[in-house]
Image (cartoon, rainbow, N blue to C red; front, side):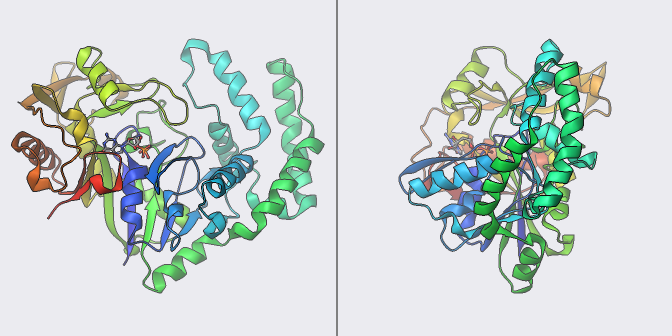
Length: 424
Ligand code: GDP
C-alpha cells in the first residue's frame, strides 16, 4: 500500500516543498492534489533556487513522474511558463502529466477576482488574485471549463460563449469594466492546448496502475489544514480542500492505498492574510520569528503574521488528516530565544479549550495558554543528527510530539536537502 500524503498542518507555508523534495527520492510518482498557482514552493537543488507554483517539486528528479490531479485548477499560461522556466535551468519537464479533468483558470476569473476584491474593500479576503477562487466557484456551479475541453474546439467555443455572456454582463454592468472577447480567449487557449496535449493523460488510471505495480506514490497538498474550505477557519480559507481526504478524491484512489500521512509542521506558526490566529505575536518576538524565518510570501512577497507553536491546531490537524508522523521544519529559526512558548490550550469566554472551539466567534477570541520551555542559543543549521541537537531543542521536540500524540519523523534545520534530520 505505497501511497503517502504530505499535508500542511497549519496555515500553509510550513515547508511542504522542502519536505516533498526530501521524500521524493524514494518516490516514483508525485501528485499535486489541490489548489492552483497560489502555492509557492521554494526548492533549492542542483545549485538553483526554484519557485514552483503548480508543478510538483518532484519534477527535479528525473526518475519521477509529476502529476497534476483533477482537484487542481490550472492556468494553462502559468503552467507553460513554469515548464519553460524549468527548461531554462536544465530541468526536463517532459515527465509532467496533467489530468484532462482539471478545471482551467480563465481570463475572466482573474478579472472578476480583481474587481470583487476591490469592491469588498476592507472586507476583502486578501486573495492572491490568480483567479483560483472564481475558478473553483465555477466548478461547483458546473460552468467551469476543463483542460479536456480544449481538445474539441467546437465544444470549447460553445461552453465559453455561454459562460462569457454572463461573465461579461457582470463585468460591464456591475463593475463597469470592458467585456472580454471570446475570439481572443479561444486563440490563446488553443495555442496552449497544442503544447499541453502531450502531457494530458488519465491521471487516476495512471496513479492506480502505478500503485498496482508496487510503485511509491506521494500525494502533495498545497496550503494547510487551517485554510481548508471545510475544515479551516472559514471564510478565511482557500477555495479547495488541502486535507488528506481530498487527496484521494482528487487522485481518484481509495483509502486502502495510503500508508503514511506526513504532517508538515513549522516549529512556530505563520499566517498570511486575515482571519483568526490565536498565537499571533504582535510584539518583538513575532517580528523576530518573521525576520529569522524570512516569512514573506513566495508568490506575493507579503509579510506573514508570526506566532508561537500551537498544539491545539496541531492536534486538530492530526485528527482531521489522520497523521502518522510529523515533519518539523524551521527548528533553526527558534535559536536565540531565552524561552520558547508552546500553546497547549485556549481560553475563550471563560472556558478552556484543548480542541479547536466549535464556534468561529470563540476561535476569534481565543487566548492562548502557554507553556514556556527553555530556549537555546546554538545555531542549528550545521547539525546533521537529531541526537546532536542541543538538549533544550530536543526537549522542545519531545514536548511537541507528546502534546500532539504523533511521532516526529524528520526535523529540518535549514532549507537545504542535507538539513533534514530523520528520527532514528
Ligand atoms: P510550502 O509553501 O509549505 O511549500 O513552503 P516552502 O517549501 O516554500 O518553504 C518555505 C520556506 O522555508 C522556503 O524558503 C524554504 O526554503 C524554507 N525552509 C524550509 N525548511 C526550512 C528549515 O528547516 N529552515 C529554514 N531556515 N528554512 C526552511
